[in-house]
Length: 105
Image 1: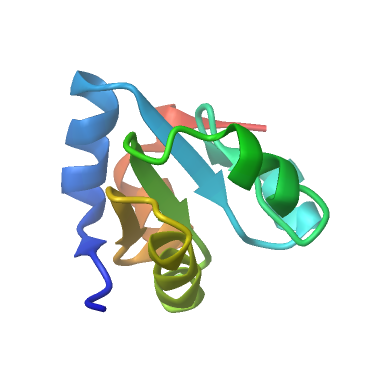
Image 2: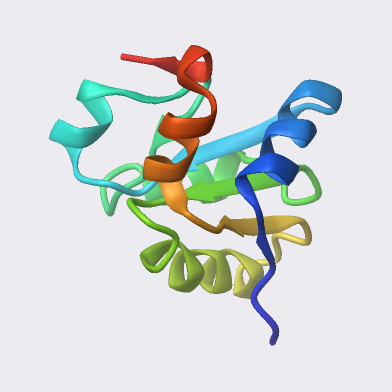
């Protein structure tokens, strides 16, 4: 299965035009310090609930620090039936530089 990877710019466009599920797989401290607006912290504790309640057809944007760990998380979500899951190239660090107004803590 091919992992869907998109740029921060494409991810931002999606957030402006369609309803997206945004997940942040970074550690809790990093998430608390700042994350994309509307992102939920996804970890081993919240994963089962997310898998049960999430819309598997919705655009799902997966953030990590730099866009590496999110690729494996995206692959996992795709294997769980998420048809529009995307790893964000550059991760939260790139997002923070490009879209400082699209961050909340």
